Length: 60
Image (cartoon, rainbow, N blue to C red; front, side, top):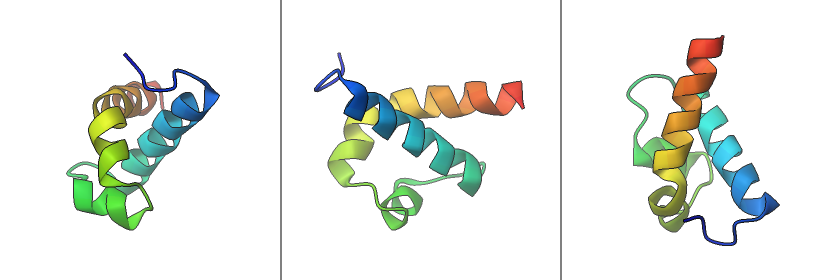
């Protein structure tokens, strides 16, 4: 399911989730692009990053 499936993929998802949390509710693709993520990364990893960001927020 994950391209590359390696540590780079996991790190990208984690970084994106952290960016989503720092931006807060209502985070958009444009917000993530401003944080340095590409359209392709958002398309590939956005759903997983959103899930992780939600879990991280609930654990806090």
